[in-house]
Length: 434
Image (cartoon, rainbow, N blue to C red; front, side):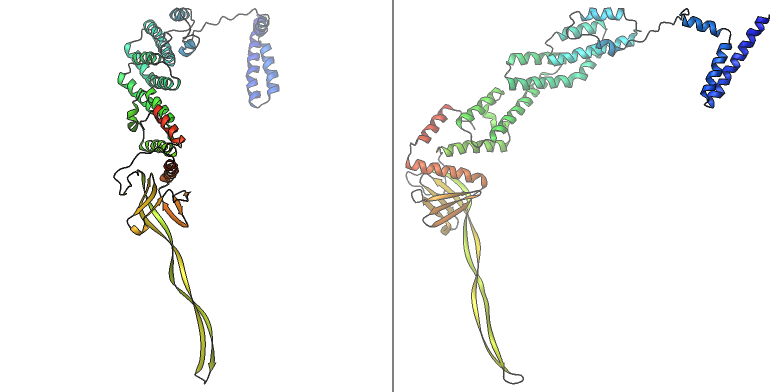
């Protein structure tokens, strides 16, 4: 009886001391609170035996085994979706031996994720590594419906279209065999139900882009020789277009630049085409090569009047009358005025001719009389004896006219000069379509 009373008292006092520690901890007296807490614990009769069992590991706790739900992302991450030849068997074994909770929702999420990743891998390889068979197996194993498969593929359609465009671009850049490219595009077309018209539109768009890039690069050339023109011809054919359609395939600006570059090469080498229907009266053996609109410039000194200066003296005669005399000098005042006379500057096989509506401002210079000419950024200056004839042209025409004039003079003295012969030989070997 006495032991039982002591047992109860120890429990009461121990619990009371433990409760007292709350006040000590609240008042932040941690040392005193800790001492009281330990004292209270040791007063409780069953604390020491319990502590002894813990220390000697004689106490065992049997915790319940918890099962967590299956995480689809983690499950799929551990699979080798590319190289595993027995993928379905691997998936089945792992699901059967998994310690996770696998419900219908988890199975659906896992199936969707695997199907999507395999389809994505198929896009990257253009379904050349057996991805179609894997998709069918996954669909069967996870019981995916047609609607579910279609929804997954729709979410990847943009990526598939980008892959088709990439294949077309690579085929142009790296000259892949057409069968190689067509087979892979066909795989993507079938897998994602892409129409033939869409594929053809992508091909045209990609080809147009490559052609534009190529032509813009070529149009920056200063000149285009027959060899360069042939290279353009072959590139257009390689991209699947008819060279005859070049004006429809590029911009008017690019086309103008290409024509100018070709024309400049011909003019520099003395190759000309006759121009008919001009206002010139040509000599029997004379041919007109060029006619550009321009303005003849003349600097004229114009009198504007006179400037007076001088001085004088004055002598008083009476209070109100004075007599004086003086002198003055008159100087003429002049100003330089630039006159412009519109007309047409011609180049023939024998001479330079400028025809103006004002006949007195027209002129002609035969090559044998032309001492030299000066080239300016916006025109040309012709020198005959001590006379200067200046004609202003459009900027794009100046270089062409100067090149043509140099070659025309050379041809007039030697109709079969070496430069012209070599140019004609090169033209015979090349394409002429620009």
